[in-house]
Image (tube, rainbow, N blue to C red; front, side):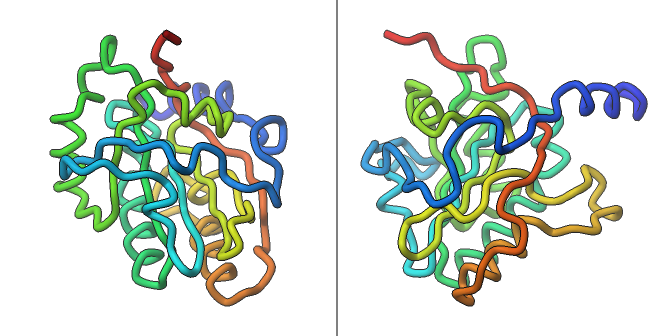
Length: 199
């Protein structure tokens, strides 16, 4: 995809975080649902929760937007975990049309990126539906009391060397310090989640 096409696509897919989904201050839904992680273990959002908060990121493998941010997702996630924030990355996509999103590829991606936190399969896409998540990547940060304090983008540029605002990192730092998150909601771009059919 050339730069012009990427920018045009990004413009079309930009979504205001406040237009839908959970509201700031809400508790996380579906926290007890067990999901298979790349290590083969079943883990829920509650299992992954940390003393200083919990970061939930909806992601996948095939999406060009995820690929643009995946190294930063790994970096922010690993750093957050080291500060006592639980982290879980959730793939809610149906891999039927996008084989790159299958479990084996998830295992490869997690190893490649050095995830120190669970990367799990939302096998029914119902966890994503409960969050009203629609894009990959899409981040939700909950504080130590379980309340949503940040929803939106990882940062403000798909190009790592052009980032000027580290939205998610700043939110994590504020939450750990017990301070108000400076920017609680941001616009974000991403591929639409490829929801599995309801049964």
